[in-house]
Image (tube, rainbow, N blue to C red; front, side, top):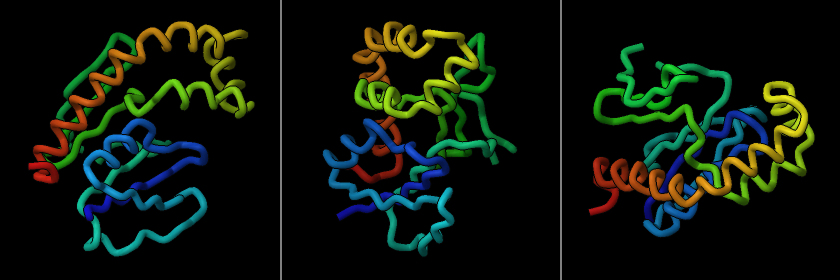
Length: 151
């Protein structure tokens, strides 16, 4: 059995569609809720570290892999052993649907994008979900094969 250590920096954030991929590859996640002050366990028993986002920024020397008009850094690599994404490729329709039960998420979105932003985002994002799922699958497959966790 393979194990993934998952660092969660914020309440309600989770690996999303990556959990499906882990299950398919027999990788069992172990989440560490850092925002609650949980201790990081010894790393030796894990095959993969999966770090979710937060207010932290990326360790200097990262190579930018992708950018957009709105965000100069969308994806980075650190040498040949770590990748990171700024965009939320882990999102699923279920993730986005769940935001309606988190008033703070909806309020934060409306502060940035204006009233009705949640409904507008759902309308924009849902049609893109199949393509996003395929792209995320490619990212995951490339990572898992490059690390040797799938042969």
